[in-house]
Image (cartoon, rainbow, N blue to C red; front, side, top):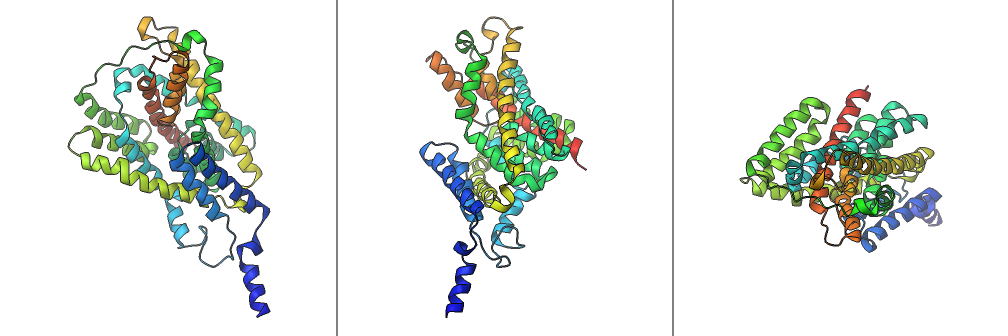
Length: 378
């Protein structure tokens, strides 16, 4: 009997717990706390946080439980992350939710979405300087796009061994958009710039809305074929929305499909944060680089809007705050630009204008991922 009890105790989680597991369980609880009490990206942080709890309960190897063991439930779910199945499905749902009208009515906002991608390429060189390989650096740098699915997609191709740290870092900074971006926006703009009023966007026709996803996909896919999976799903979802004849499909894509995939994706990412492979010096460097990347991307968007204003006059001028929305954290970064703008002029509504660079950032981050994959793949 004593031998049975001893064996049971040794094989229990309490018998195998390591300090790293405790740390990761605490971090998971913090994620859940921030999601519930602060409303920081709850649809992402709750599944990721609980996945961290599951992934850090120690068990005896070979029991057919862990995500590393073949054909277990967690292993099968993790395949969607490891092999990049989930990100294109997320993009399908995003496309079905996205309204490109503001971007179509004011195409110059596209440049703000492009400028914000500077954070990606600047961070790549920083990662190389810290000793990461070019492929690893490319995967880490995409965190600057503030686009979790794209970060997962690219890291699964270039650096699958860093996928957990990159994914958690990307989603963490997406959740912290309301905390990270405002100080940078205030630092780089003046009181006068923050109250600039932009003219209302023009009315976009249905024909333009229908043609855009078709033309947009062909143009971007020929430019970067390696991003075809992400861009194809994004523009396909948008066509379902704008065509007017596939509302049932669009409704499924932007509701039940994206919700289901988000649950499994977030949970699987959390499970992959097993302490022994996650708590490493590399992970700390990745989190530091991710923070720098996100800050550079925000600053680049704001500064480029200020640069464009040197050549614009009257009501064609841009409120530089919307440049921060060039990172593709949809719609949080656009909402932050709107909230900061209203702090200085309560009657100035920037949300619709900020959505232009915001959706441009989604396309821009996917294109950047395609460029990096094409250039760095072995």
